[in-house]
Amino acid sequence: MTLSHSTTSLVLTDDQGVRHENVRPVRLFPLTDPQHWISLVGDNGRELACIEDPATLSEEQRAVLNTALARRDFVPVIRRIANITRAPEGHDWHVETDRGATVFRIETDESIQSLGGGRLVIIDKLGTRYLVPQITDLDRESRRRLERYY
Image (cartoon, rainbow, N blue to C red; front, side, top):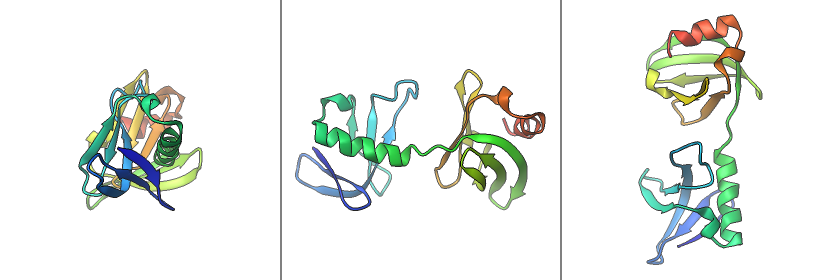
């Protein structure tokens, strides 16, 4: 198995020499051990390979993997929940993040996951993850809105 990158995506060449374009690295559980267990997922959503310990990769391949993970690990931090409205297929969340105001849609309450210690991750319909580092740090109105869904 070798990892490389094209201009915009991660490329995996498997042990049989088959080249897989647009591969996505996904951190597996536990999320508390982010340095291990990375799944490489193809366009069809199926796992192509699993890397137990990225430290076993060559320095060059590790750098390619870390670059792809950094792109994927873009996680805006929610500072305030301005509003949550019903949408045809879920709920639209109007929030202020550390990167500015945005609106995203979640489909079910299962899109809100506890990370323990008062931390939450909210995964929108497009797969973008939003972090609430500490529920108690949100203002009272934001906590009230959140309580209806979590």
